[in-house]
Amino acid sequence: MVRWRSGTVLSVRRSWRGAVELDVTTEQGPLRALAYPHLVGSPEPGDRVLLNVGALVMGLGTGGYALVVALPDRLPADPADAGTTRDSGHLVKARYTPLQPILLGVDEEASPHRAVMEAAESLDGMPVVTADLHSALPAILAGVHADRPDATVAYVMTDGGALPAWFSRTLDGLAGHLAGTVTTGQAFGGDLEASTVHTGLLAARHVLRADVAIVAQGPGNLGTGTAWGFSGVALGEAVNAAGVLDGRPVGSLRISHEDGRARHRGVSHHSLTAYGKVALTRADLPVPAGLEAALAADLDFLSDRHRVVTVPVDGLDEALRASAVPLSTMGRKLDQDYHYFLAAAAAGRHAAALLGPAGA
Image (cartoon, rainbow, N blue to C red; front, side, top):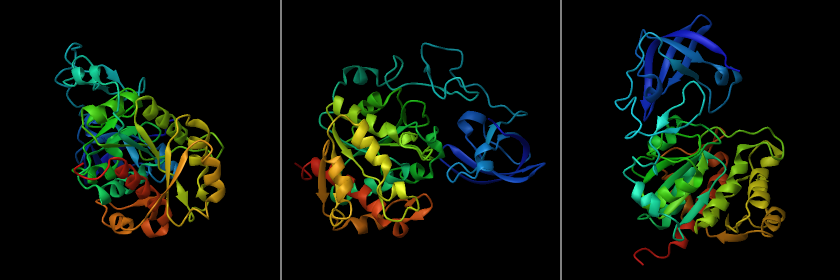
């Protein structure tokens, strides 16, 4: 349940698209807090704030902030279109929570993209790279652009992790490198809002004009350590969505030889379950050249349902080190979990190969 605190803003630390980091004092001591101005307004020093400190108390790596729930003495003004229904959105996300936002869906009647979305039925063979963790996003992008720097890439963010896209500093750093972000399901804050992964993929293709789409949850993967108790199960459903819409599913394998948990070493059980049991559509599963023997048993299991593809790695190290944003997963940097990022980049390279040669 919610752990509440009341505090006062001491200072504004840093900000990125959609988020502001704060120093807040409370009766229990100083806290690092995060506010989403689109939801609660823009905090200033001296403002009283109501905080949810649950994630901070639990010590969650990606959720380790006190979250500002309200500025009770200085509420933001209503949106300009408040009270209307015809010309504003009615897509409600984080539904029936106290901070549910009401947004304009990309395919709603009032959307400028309505006609395009009504006509959109197919992904036209667009490669769709699916990944378990948000941290794979920049590595996949690096792999795509290593061979096809001209390729237009869109991010379709699912709701298994953070709901606000604004939480991600990675997305802020990738501005100009992605065609845009489509937030789907209960997730929100992207350049476009969609109700399902299916409409999100269609919007990526036909509104953002993407050559390649990357599907992954926001930061903060949920997992209980059990066979089926993790949010990445939805990865298999994303593969199915891509296949139903005539896309080319490419599954980025979660591979690690450095993770301290046995279930995530080699090919993670997340990938084995999502691709090997949930995904019903055949996908390409790229593997970096040189890792095939060490992963033979896992790859043999996955090859019953999917096509395992060996991908050359020449040039991928340079592409990863030139990433527009720092690479990090579970606190481990590029050289501390190298095969994780290399596998993601290999998936991106394979997606680029499916586009054919540049200029073709």
